[in-house]
Image (cartoon, rainbow, N blue to C red; front, side, top):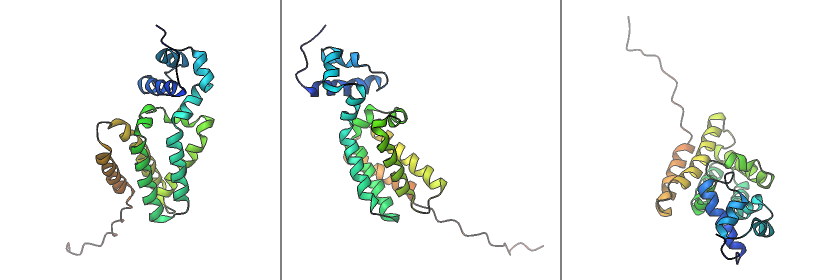
Amino acid sequence: MIRRAPRTHGEILAAAARRFAVTGYKGTSLQDIAREVGCSKAAVLYHFGGKETLLAELMAGPISALCELDERISSLSGAAAQRAAAEGFVDLAVRFRGEITLLRGEFPELLAQPAFAHVQRISERLIEAMTGPDGGQDARVAALVLLAGIAEGCGAFADIPDEELRPALLAVAQRVLVTPTPPPPPTPDHQHQD
């Protein structure tokens, strides 16, 4: 059953967000979105030009905030950069967890799209900030797992209020990013004499 034509650009955008949340970006067609709004596929194309444009507009807020975070950490180094990157990403993920939820499980494919190439570069700089200048392979792995885990946690724990989720994520970030002090070298055991 066809309903009235969409009154606003926003109705199509909201329908796309609902469809992406239910069937994922790849699993949603423009026809699915049009059907939900009650318009033709041509009307969706008129407003957006394609599914990629819809996604880009849905993600404009989070991407803008990510660019601001990237700019903020670019002038920092060491522990200050690490702290700013972790806290900034947690804040961003909690603030935009609705948008993150839309794309759970599809980030690698989406980041491969030309419209999101800069997001991949920013993610690399966040990892760099979190690992610090001396960060080796283990630190890079920890930072990548942390970024992915924060994003996944924000989508998976939609029932936890922001004011509870944020400190929990920050506590995890602090535990993951703290560089453990290596144990002292073993000393010879002088108690055992033959």
